[in-house]
Amino acid sequence: MKKPKQDILTELWENPNEALVFMYKHYRSEFLSWSNKNYGIPEADALDCFQDAVIVFYRNVVEGKITELTSSEKSYLFGIGKNFILRKKKKIRQDVANDTPGNAQENYFGADMYSGGMMANRVADLVLSMRDPCKSILRYFYFRGLNMEEIALKMDYKNAQTVKAQKVRCIKEIKSLVKRKLRSEL
Amino acid sequence: MPYSFDHIDRYIRGELTPRETSEFEEELRSDPELKERVEEQREILNGLRMGFNRELKDMLENEERRITKKPEMKRLWLFPTIGIAAVVTLLIVGYFALIDSIDTNDLYSKYYAAYPNVESPVARSEEADNNPFNAYEQGNYRMALSIFQELLTAEPENDALLFYSGICYLELNQPSEALSQFEETIMLSSPEFSRPAIWYSSLAHLKEGNISRSSALLNSLLDNQDLYSRKASELLDDIH
Image 1: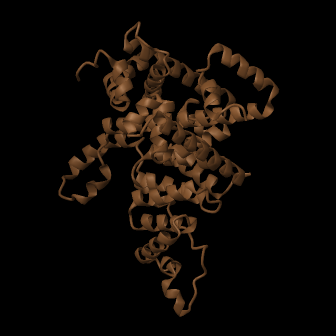
Image 2 (image 1 turned 90 degrees about the vertical axis):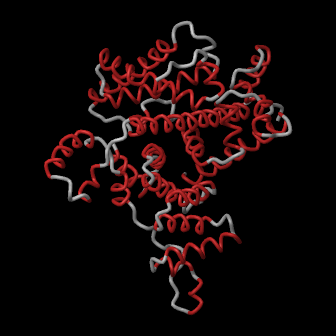
Image 3 (image 1 turned 120 degrees about the vertical axis):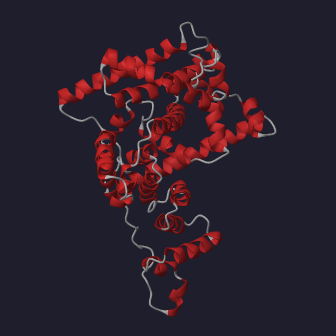
């Protein structure tokens, strides 16, 4: 496999999905043998941790926590992965100690990156079935860190103001959907 | 209300100037209503982040499945000409590959049952010819579907029509069409059909071999204590 591009950070900004899959494939087997050697966790758990690490790496780039790589991207990535491994090991120990098999959600996701408060969970569930333009606008703005001008350009809107107004409408719609849903469950 | 959505948004994202922030926080301390708005908005933004994280996780899990794609051993019996020795060897090798793999189609068949007709009692009169629920009850899903779809053009937001169309698509082995009908049902927050629609969506994803999407939906059913939470937890146990 070819070496990852020097400017992985730029790649992650511009083509996150491709860059993430590339990173994943590029370091996957090295991470597996590294984690097996140092922490001896089952392969399925290691893969789960590695996937989360790749996502967190990306989040850190978008949220401005990484603006340049002082160490190599590999050591940065493996550093995040290590935290996930330690967390998982601790959780396994706790479950054994309490003799309870943690709840299904936690087992499946392994971290609070994927679940949270009741309302947040409902919103996250909605994301799966959300449609455009809301889905793209919200993804670009809140997840990929683009500004309104960039989104207007990408999505062929007249200007930033139009996108902004549409974004407010989308959030309002989500809010009322989720509130109705929560009320109907009471 | 003095503070706009956008202002709160910028506060949550840490984009206000230090001065604006301290002004805003002072207001927050004395205005419980504003505090509630901020909390709500924070939950929504958190939920969005979680949802998009889940999408990336799905993407990487799919990539992983492509990397470790396992040979499909089940179909071997279709080829009787393969020598028994070869089959045995393959089975031994394949056994280890198969232990932790899941046959999503088997799980689908185990859990799938068409949703009962609870909408319309089947009438025995002549008018009944146009009642799609008659066709539905008789298992004539193609006919039922075409009537449901026709009725939907007049009433595009009818949750029952959308939901039963979804079931028809599943019966006709078209899970992705089924999914879009269920998604619309869910978007309508139908009190009667939302949870069933989530359940059948998870089965449709299973049918398509997409375990992570299916699991995510099943997990979302666990909160309530009802038939669907029980079915979901049973199916999740089978998946893991």
